[in-house]
Length: 276
Image 1 (tube, rainbow, N blue to C red):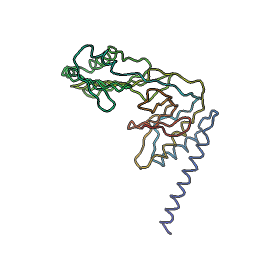
Image 2: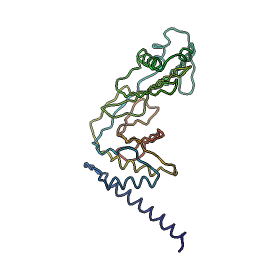
Image 3: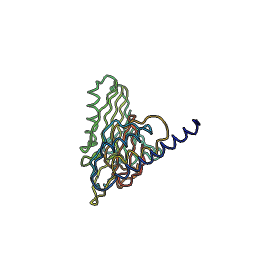
Image 4: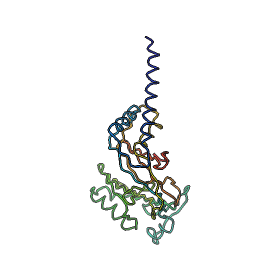
């Protein structure tokens, strides 16, 4: 028996099966509601596992037509810094690429029109407890008109380091493309923000692809044999123009891996959006 030939035939057979399974599930991407059967789920998991993609989450079955949303970023310019932080203090100012940088005392602020970065170095953080550091971050946000109500909060404590992340939402959907976070260690405090100040939903709604189809798109970009563990797949919005002040955020399926990588699949077209 020619084992080399047999091996080649097996490889080709599996490749054909992969394509057939892919096309079978892709046909489920129809405008009308469709729930995956046990057979559908089995086929999906099989084609994913053959490509070293492991599902450790449930696949969303419900979806509805979604519109684009118009977004406008919050403005962080020189006037914002001068009015809220400098307030008559002596300071130095210089340009670095697109950023305007202010230095005053033991503090540094960077702004570029749509994002804000603050850094403070001090020994006072060394003796703070985790709860005191958390309170310091909250007080900073409240004191400088940085508070937001349309977001979810995630708190992380690692040893003496405290980090609070804020994620923007709109009508129960996430909106990725912005951020707000504060971090305090033993010697310093950092805060950064890039947020959508205005969010408006457009009137026209379009059908979106199934979560199963979005998951299968990962097969196209998976080039190594290292396992990719999927921890979450969720429907929301993504604005991928990092330097734009306004534009349209598109509906996406956001796929998050065990390592924290995020893949965005356009829920209208099925194509990958920029970002990972």
